[in-house]
Length: 431
Ligand code: DOR
Ligand code: ZN
Image (cartoon, rainbow, N blue to C red; front, side, top):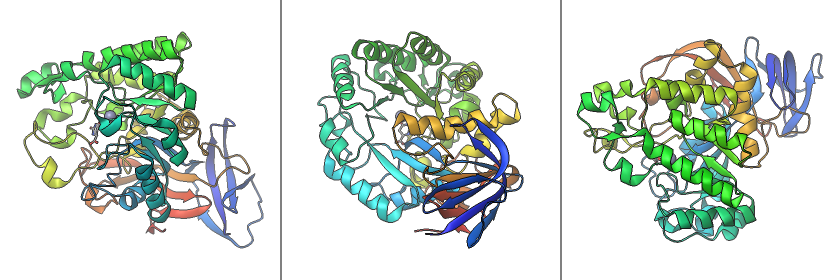
């Protein structure tokens, strides 16, 4: 096995609260040592001067589109795009074709990922058959096949009795249920946040309340069942407040926010760019501010991209017809670094939300630079300026609201299991 020495970076290890300049040695697929004057014989050296060196990012919310929608993305292209953004592990949602609601599909995804993806891939299985919100999936069989959580992401489970049973079963198997909270009867045909922007655009609005009533319901059901509820893509101030209060009461709840909900408001939709159409929608400035505060104070545990690729011809329609979603792996670092540049969060705490916390939520390795931990590492230059061009990225899709924009901060190198899988100057290296 190869040895790699990452030289002279700022080591950020939330697991040990370490934040200091040091070298990091990887050997035999694991972290071998941190410090100075490490034995570098036979080691490939990565210069990390001026860079952050952190545990690889763990993305709890991605859509890899395989099986079934490989014209948008597949496990190979999604895995490449992920490591180019600094993600070493991904959890992928079940809204594939067929839906990942049986062990054979879970098995297929894991098998393909082993062959094709430079990032580790952890399937999240559907909570209900066909994502129809009617019949529960067989959780223990899906877990035996490798599912790390259950979710009908993209769809909301409207039947509260069924949701209760899903939470009860999830408690027995001790995995989180990831909820996409949008009350369908309140969303109706809403495509942008309900408010001045929807009025101005003349587009049907999707009210913040659509998210908030379901977060409230699911918190109540988590309280009733004792299950671990994980709230996906939190987008409203009311949802943040409900989650914060639930936590204070001791409810077993975790939550994530996306780079887009942390930085973009509904004003981004004012030119009808369908790359700003996402579910839940971009919200008001007050909502964005509340999500940022939630991330900073720990109410929101992690950043997750909700990387949701769609083909050019699918997005190139009128706003109401285009599918919701945007790609997010390769822009997550520069976009979210805005919070560090504005002194809202420290680098160490931000890394905790990208790596340590999400790894804990799905109980998988990662999130630590301690000796013997897996050699999943990211090197970031927080000051590097570049212009984002999705056509030059690794995703098969280009649906990004940040296309053509100048970015500050970039993933320089990504290592998975002690192997260099991405370097900004050399591109994706394996498999
Ligand atoms: O914007 C979104 N896109 N939200 C979802 O919940 C689903 C996702 C997708 O699959 O495209
Ligand atoms: Zn979702």
